[in-house]
Image 1 (cartoon, rainbow, N blue to C red):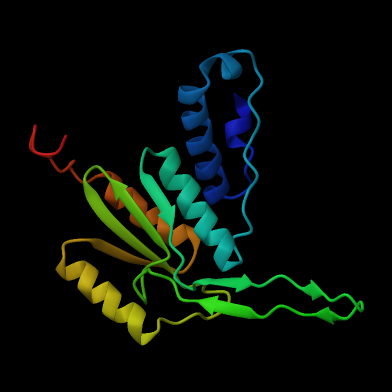
Image 2 (cartoon, rainbow, N blue to C red):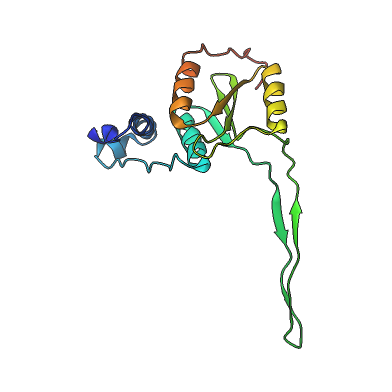
Length: 176
């Protein structure tokens, strides 16, 4: 049980506490038997680390959280070796994503709210592109809550405010 509080920094304590609470609900026997282990802390100096923190932390609080990528993917044709042993290198083709350009890095649904979080790492001085600003404005007009996470501390502060919002009621029987 004391493992919850072993993080040196406040964000580590909060991350571990959220993990423990989630794990205790999902695996009560394992925790009761004393086999709980602390989560591995992400590297919060990287954009990927901040994003991982956000996804994990919100999931452990009961949110539906997903990372969104709009860069597309690379399809590579296979290399061919001819009868004479000559190797012909296959071409690589970049396929565009079907996602909306400028979409936020994470999409979260919590207590009926649509939350969009854009990660702009303060350690690398990231800035928002034109398409990302347009997406933010469109999301806000549609009623979503949008946040720019520059570090995990600012995200925790924002998330604490989200947690105080009353749940949005969905009419019974409207969506089954």
